[in-house]
Image 1 (tube, rainbow, N blue to C red):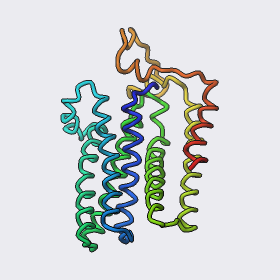
Image 2 (spheres, helix red, strand yellow):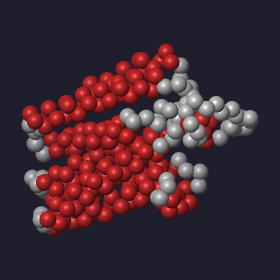
Image 3 (cartoon, rainbow, N blue to C red):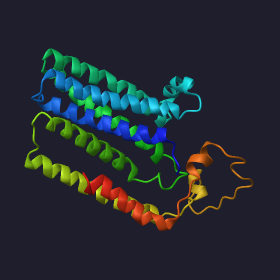
Image 4 (cartoon, rainbow, N blue to C red):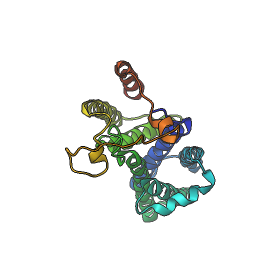
Length: 261
């Protein structure tokens, strides 16, 4: 794959933002953070800013950005539309919780909004992952590791940014929290290794018959080329990297996403 920068920015920034919102929501559903209302509002503002920048960058990826509003109308059948609906809906509990924090009203309403915010943030990340995981024509994406991988990356990256910002107030993580973070990073490493092993065993490209819903084992032959010229699919998904580069690139990925954190 040879993705556009807007896709990378959307996936990364939105993942961090939704991870922060999920942790903030869970924390306020349990107990309010011992922070000033200004700093707490700043944390929420940063998370929403990352989400918003990610969503705006995704619009740049569309052929007709002015028609983006039509995408949310297909939520019954499209994971892309479901992602859009959930992304927009997540703003409501986030803004509502910030208002209660600013007013100092910590009660059942704030706990409910916290739980709702965490659920909506994680659901949005799941919808993003399912856009790729539902594409049976691309075996490397249509894999059971994709969904938990997206969620884990969002929670870990959002948690890392949140803990870093909290440390500016003098707060220090306790041993149980450090152990939980290390366990999450170890789980991410195991998940990535399992995913790479799984896609290496898959036959690429995928079975044509199963991709169109026919019984396994049936032979399906194309009578003409699927693309007669360069287009979106050939530009972004027709990119092939030599297999000899797989091992060092995977080692770099684990070093940056697991060992360094």
